[in-house]
Image (cartoon, rainbow, N blue to C red; front, top):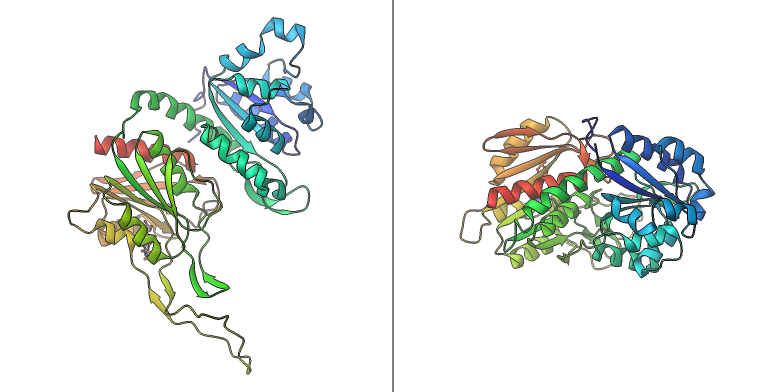
Length: 411
Ligand code: CTP
């Protein structure tokens, strides 16, 4: 998506660099933002100073780095309130647990937190912290509060961290942050135009994997993270739709303004979808397990005495997309499927559109690196009218684009 060299031309970004090892990635972020034409004003926190120097940030941004809330000279140049208002968008990267906690509670004891409290612009946070800090109930609470306040989040990504632990905690890659900034600014301007474009419309979105029990401790599932479906649900809600998100087991927080129903199995997902009808649009993003064990054993299956491997007898799960797309009075006006393919993406997608009876099919190559579980996606939109190849973009950006297409189609 980020090919237009001057795509952020004339935009002003306030970048708050928090104190974490990922702060070094903020330097690359500044470079990418500037390359895209944005003006970047950095704020470096006390913690941030331990990881990157004001000199590097200043050299890359071409701006004087702000650090102190009570600096007379800085305040004389541009007061902190003006600083936070003059930007088109605020990025916090890395967003530490401490910065999130301060922002969630409205604390303003340094320049970064004061700017966050004073701003009236969109805020994008790219969290980075130790996995246990990310998983701590306090951080989960703060995340939910900030999301409800309308703060956008990107990441953290899964992976090995500087502290040696593994899990979600790594800051999103600078390119993904850049893509998200572009999507937010685009969405912001089109949202003003399209504000309420889906007001009064009902949307149903399925997301995440399903988990099919084998016995009380084992399940059949897949690697879907739910990120794409959640991004679509959030984007539809931002356009004013009344959204029900039927989600399989994922660790994502419910998007602001979305009614979420958590389920585990495909059968539960189908039932929750049917209960959510009527809807004007259904978007089936979930990676539904095609099969489930014929019977879920009541007690744990034990290893056989002769070292023989257990065998599973599987039965096919209901096809939720096909069920929703079936002609009838309850059929949503627009039914959209997703296709996870690893080869011959376009040919399989066209065949799937017909087979499932849906109106549009969004096909993605899940064999491509970083699509499953990652923050970026590359899709093609297959409709009766033909095939559109969308450029690679952040999943949030794909969500925005699809939501505005849905708004156009239902207008
Ligand atoms: N889907 C569904 N219920 C199922 C299986 C799939 O609703 N039991 C939906 C998915 O949410 C997605 C679309 O169908 O929108 C395509 O999913 P995909 O896994 O790509 O296709 P399959 O139906 O599994 O077909 P195949 O195995 O041939 O790829």
